Structure formats: C-alpha cells, structure tokens
Image (tube, rainbow, N blue to C red; front, side):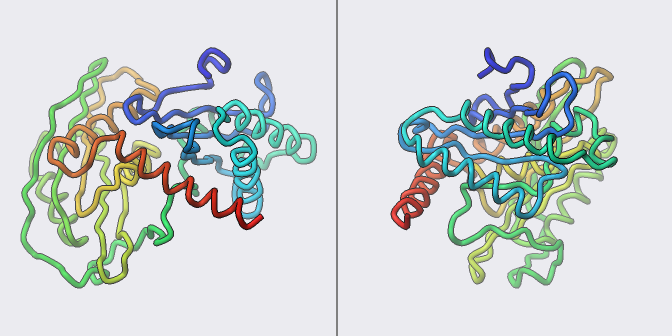
Length: 300
C-alpha cells in the first residue's frame, strides 16, 4: 500500500498494525477528502477483516452509513482476500461522484490537509461488541462505587524524538472523581504542569450497566485524546487512566507524534499488566467482527 499510495499512506502504530490513508477525489485539486484508518488483525486477510474508522468533518448520517455498508459488502464478497486496495478505490469513487454532484461547503474548504488527517469526529468502530460501549458524561454520580482515595500513579519511560519528549503516566481508576484526583496530583508536579500537552483517556467498566464509562482529552493536541482512547479500546483495558505528557521541542513531528503517544501508552499498559499482548487483542476483535459478518451473510 505504501508503494501504491506513497505519502498518502502513513503508519499510526506499527506494533498494533494501525495505518491511515488520506483519500481524495482529485490528487492535484481535491474538493472532498476522507481518512481511512485501519487496524489489521493477525488473521487478516484469511479469516478476519480490517477494523476501520472513517474520518471526515463532512461525513455524517446516512452518507456515512451508506459508505460503511459499501465497505461491508466488499468484505463479504471477498472473504479471505486482501481488500484494502478495493476499499480505498471504492471510497475514491464515492468522493469523485460526490465532487461531480456537489461543491464542498465553505467550512470544509477551509480545512487544511493536516486537519483532515487529524480529524477524529464521529468515529466508526466496526469492532464494537453487542454490549455497546458508551461514552458517558464526566459526572461523578454515574458510578455508584465511588472511592475517595487517590490511586497510585506510575510513570513510564520517556521517549524523545527531535527534541520533543513524551512520557506516559498510569493510574487505576474506578470512578470519575478519581480521574480528577489523578489529574490534580499530576499537575502538582511542575515539570508535568509545564508540558505542552497532557493528553489523557480513561475507561471504567460499570458492572451494573455492563457498559464502559470513558472519556478523553486532547489538551490542544488535535485528535490525540481520541486516538489514545481508541488504542485503549483495541487493547480492551478497563478501570485505568493513562496520561501522556508531551514537551514540544520546536520541531514538527507530523504523524510521528501520534505514534509516540500510542507507544508510550501501550508500553506502560503492558508493563503494568493491564492488557494482553497486542496479538491476542487483535485476534479477539477480529473474531468478534467475523461472527457479525457471518451472521449478516446468513440473513441474506
């Protein structure tokens, strides 16, 4: 894919096999652009499909559903085969048709290339289980089993690239109040408080509702919080909060900054035994997706 699409194709997280490609209706003069982010389970393409997200500020409602259905149909028609190229070209065809029919709104035209790549609004996670994951408001009343005590906080090994430094901090949490307490404690550290960005995400499992209470914060690093939360969903972690501090060194890192943020978070989650290996997590998600696909095929 990198050989075919060049700079349009980028690696988000090599360890988890997460990739992103920017797709436009016209390379030289794009009117409509969409980012396809995929995670490839170990069983792909044999028995599991890619887990994907469609990211674009204009993609909403029925238009999003129609495009997702088209990708689903391509997978069903080509089970066992590599379908990324087919997906990309299908999306490009949709964008070309859209370009011929309509002009983008002024707000869409103002979007820069980097904003398109970073846009994480309206994420579509094709791998969600039947007990749907829910993002709930940051309200301490949502969890009945509040614990007032400040949980222990661990600090990961920093990663430095081109004078920018990234460091992850982790704490077990079972209620939103503990999330606030952890943040307050971290900000007592002058070095952490002075970081350019303190990106965080948390996931708390509510036994009574069988749902996840989760949220994230970019802290000025556009889409970083959503990407961090997505990683935690992929790894299927629960009752934990991860904060990644970034100290900007004056040199733009482009997409590499997301790779470092995710790697910091992954390393400390694995180190503190909050997750199985990336391979096992990918296998579980791929299996879940395959079951849903087989069910859909049988209905037809």
